[in-house]
Length: 443
Image 1 (cartoon, rainbow, N blue to C red):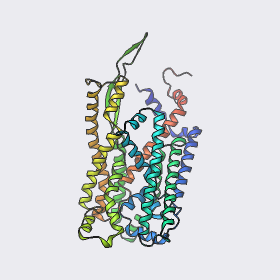
Image 2: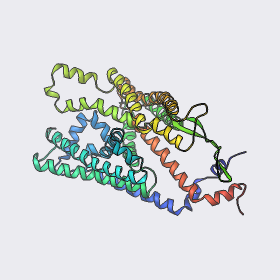
Image 3: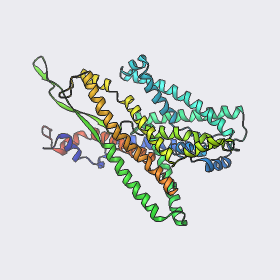
Image 4: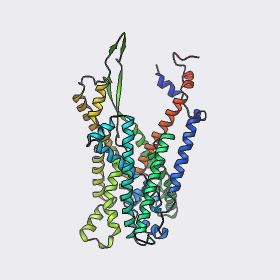
């Protein structure tokens, strides 16, 4: 017999969206906020020569700039006020998570619930401002030495660049937080999602134009499109994959009532670390080549050889890319899913694994399981990210619709759709119960 949740899901449909007024307002608010975020990526930073900047980006935009340009939706190529994007906030969040494992004070705040989470979020905002100012100053210095992109180099340009780019990051951070609290989905992820999706029409148009002019074989283009569809299906399957650990709760008697005795599962996602490993791995690998491109004329022989071997598509680059993905997958998983803390929470609520003692033994069992699952997840991430790089090396075609971009788009889409379904089920709960004719439902 189908469970109550299965009956509710069977009678669920998106036609209820027209009746869910609050959810509709949330969706409209999210769309409006994303439009504002996209408009900011077209407002140029003061003191920049757009023509000279576009020429330099076209010549040297295949390294780290290309990664950041993709994540910011083209804002880096235009050097807009949102050129830094939301990356300083993500970096600050990871730094705060690392610090909670080092400093006992921050670890205590993490365990205090909602009050502690608010304080940690405030620290993350402060860290975002600091990182954004440092990165903005570095960008200003780099632009001054990058052709004739800056009209009037000097202190005033650097100061205005720091204020403009830092202010843009703070505004994006605020928009992301508003989407999370008043809209649908994770605001930070949706901003990155919107930036990547905004570039899809232009990339598809470039591919079609290249096929029309004969620069690219049309059959090869169709093969890439077919591979992109298969890649999406594969990512959806892997992102939904879980390893469930059976957990039982013993019975306990309080007065004349008996509680507990249920069984449940502890779900462990196959890819706990998400898209963080490929983003950080590509950023670290492309940093040397990007810095070298600013001063390509003054490179010595061995530096030029090293930069050549670390170029995108080269065998050494692919090997190091895979190794860094594995490293960050294990590293970030250990941060977001600590076995000791998980075992302690299970012990607190009386949950035990069959045949395993609570406490240290349970932590070792969780660690053993998570390690094996992370190996599979890291292999999956390496496969998804390395196949497009191999295509770039094999066919000399930038497969921009694959790898990290599709991974981010699919993951954010699945998360947002799941939240929309949760809102619909919560708002239409009584109607769904009547339609399902559940046992015990009143007429």
